[in-house]
Image (tube, rainbow, N blue to C red; front, side):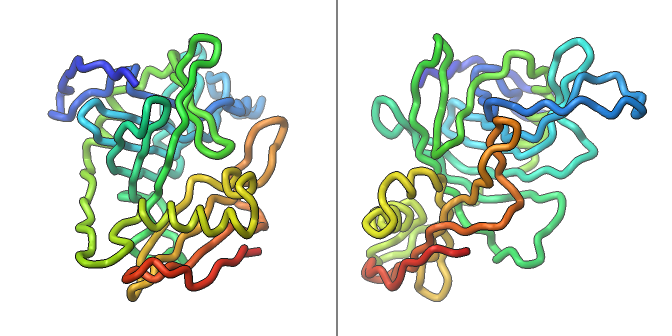
Length: 254
């Protein structure tokens, strides 16, 4: 992937994001505001925004986008946000690998394990009608030329740095990437490759010498747009012993 190397710094000293580094979930389901709301916007859409910095830094921001009256798109400040920070690298000629963890969540989830699992995303890269597209599982991401909130996004992400996990020494499964790849292989034998591909990306966390790896729950499509919940359902899950890579068990949550 060719990423531009033109770097600029905003007023607060953060590196300003260049438009070609940004990819947004597609398609977006734009919901018009209620007629009685009295707001001059075209609509809002829940989205995930990816940023691939040329230095290898990676960010994923789950947020609500606002399509303004003039057609430009900005991030809503009054709605929930989740920010993941990590690193990306080229993973062959037509794919890239991104590894990230949550560094900010507007509303803490009481039942969520702490620290939160590491996301391991292997994106396939392709051209669609002359536009660069990244795809993982059923999710697709493309540039959004109308996005005009680059300074705000730069500041949001600039407040956080990736915490580099130190791989465990002398173990067969030292990191989340290794754990996810072992889990995907084992789970594919049980549930089929197609099912496992449909649950990507997978997340991994280690607890007391055991990696717990699980997929992403998608809730079907609503009005033709992919819905990622919340909803009832489950994902393929595996437990892997960190010391020797032995698959302890696999199951599908409900």
